[in-house]
Amino acid sequence: MPRRRQEFSAEQRAEIWKRWKAGQSMSDISRAVGRMPGTVHGVLSANGGFVPPPRRRSRLALTLEEREEISRGLASGHSMRNIAETLRRAPSTITREVARNGGAPEYRASPADSRAGQRARRPKRCLLAINSRLRRFVASKLQEDWSPEQISGALRREYPQELSMRISHETIYKSLFVQARGVLKKELLKHLRSRRTMRRSKLATTAGQQRGQIRDAVSIRERPPEVEDRAVPGHWEGDLLAGASNSHIATLVERHSRFTMLVKVAGKDSTSVVRALTRAARKLPRELRRSLTWDRGTELAKHRELAMATDFSIYFCEPQKPWQRGTNENTNRFLRQYFPDGTDVSTFTQRQLDAVARRLNQRPRKTLEFETPAAKLKQVLR
Image (tube, rainbow, N blue to C red; front, side, top):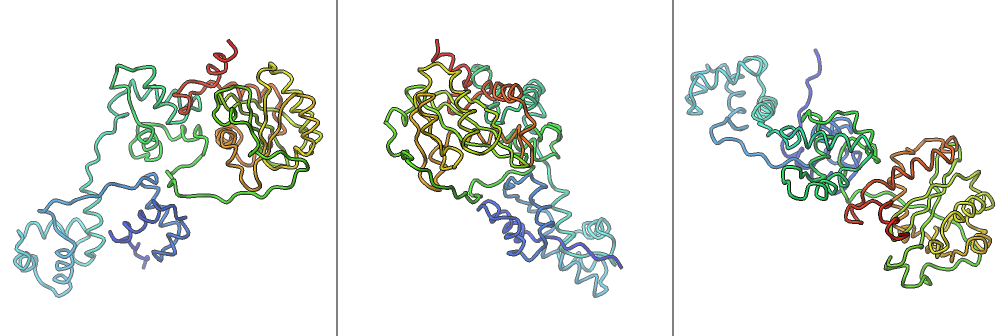
């Protein structure tokens, strides 16, 4: 006899969503509710990781307690009419309830109540389903690797007077993650830089990395105030983006404009990295070569050679505090959309890296009021 699938109770589902919203992992949640991670994933993925709004059933609908009374009555051999009289319901109500749930021999209260809840759902058509013009705009920008937040911000700038061309980034995520909506193709998910298929809580975190020691490193605490307020262009943040087979790309981000440069490096050793950064920095106008802030990676052990060759003042984050160069950290997350984990980045030519940087620099940024880094830097140079 096949094993009957065990349904989640309303209390268990509420507990799953409460823990998911609090940032707990799927493994932690499955242990807490005493179920396999795969079944917990099924509950979460059905709604794209978004906590569903509370639902209220009609006061006329059968309750779980009434269904349990029906189940006990059937087990005791009572007729449909007797059960209906006990519950003060119409006999036809009881007859239909039992028939739609497998008949008297198969009727069980909890599965019947769960199926009734599913049948009662009346999802409203979402905004993208009723506005084809807006849907085409969103889909086209997703194909260009824009994030939902960038799309939402760009719509406000391009259509300031058209309220029909407004949509929140959360609504776009829902239309991608909840495929039952059927308005955005599943293939568009690959254009999200995170590659996730479910919305995660902002409280979910990952562990940081430990870094080595740098001789004669000047601490970020000694940076002049003009670097902090981003008012003056020419101050950069840098790091190495790691790929498979011990491959790396150097990333440079200008703090004022968020303009990004990608630099091909022959290896992670300091000689290779400093040589590549020197070559790239010398292409910049002198007024854009003021300072460079790096993590504590030993790839910049020869930082004094870089400073002499480029006129950069070089500063280093404090140990285990990479978030002190948050502009670069955020940009590297953008870049994972183009160089996912496991990609051998050594196969990319400098021309290809320039093309990726150009595409990233032409995407609007929320922190720039949805202006693009390329346009921002152009204003500076002009």
